[in-house]
Image 1 (cartoon, rainbow, N blue to C red):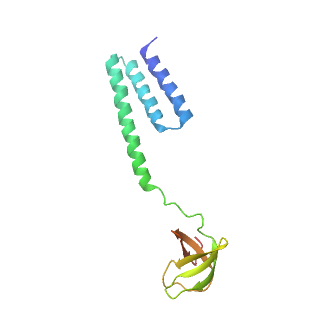
Image 2: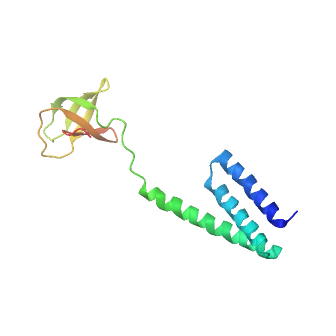
Image 3: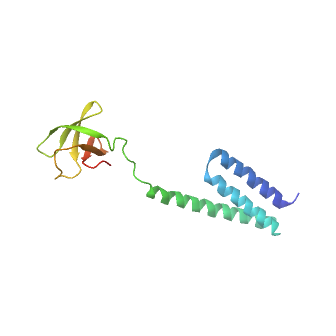
Length: 139
């Protein structure tokens, strides 16, 4: 059998493993084996075929790793599951914080803006520690 057939079969086998595991690193390796097969089809010697496959694999892995690092920085911040729910304000304190009733318990809360009106319907904007951040606008 020709050398390029071995490269392509190996690439397809690794591609099948990638489909089973869901990692993109296996996809990069499958592409690298395909590049080795193309090098074999071009008539390059076996050491050059291995070199082409290795270079494509290393470069692809580095590109994927760099993409994952930059993608982590672009992720949207996690939103609280409580955001958007209404709360019943029991009492306002002199320091601008409030005591609210939510999910069967009393919570400490503070308005999103310090000069926000103290009457009307309040919604949970965010949760910081054990304190609810309140807003008049439904998020």
